[in-house]
Image (cartoon, rainbow over all chains, first blue to last red; front, side):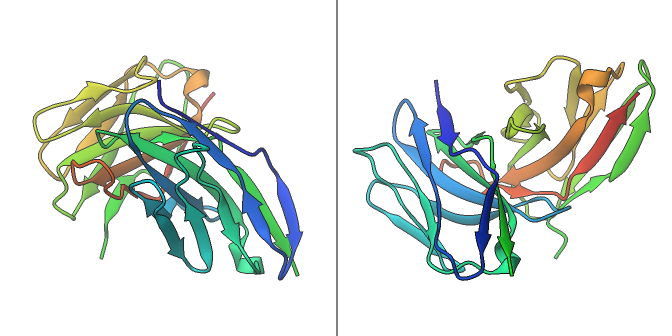
Length: 111
Length: 113
């Protein structure tokens, strides 16, 4: 079946630190890959996505590259801010449009 | 720009009571979904509707029913609530193609006592 495994949190960082959240996947077929972000008390918002191998998704200073050879889609940001404190979800969809989510990683950025 | 709107935002139920969560989207999307979010488990799909007039089970459908009332609206019903259904529920919608963005509502916090 299709599944997503992402690094467990919580992750606590200082402002301007480098952030990496690992995400690996198992899928039958060729998935599209997504990172969603959930700010406190809110629903999920799409952060970025990539629909084929070697594509790089980017948004708000975050980047992730679709690596087919390692079945990974790691999220990175070079310099985090307090406003980046949130829960981050890696997700995939294969051939259809239903998303399979990872467990989520809680990130807290301290000033 | 409303997007996906779901009600109620908060609800407390007694075991055995029934209730319906309402969801509406104004983006003319074909597909709609209900997910539940539990700590450490991410989001799990309860039911989805690929298009108006169709509904299908997701990963965790037991204890729930859905109705795709029209293209805009997709409701989730708990016929006899159980404490295990205490969760945050999210409605979502998208165009029915792989790789398309799924848009989420703000969530409904349900507690069953």
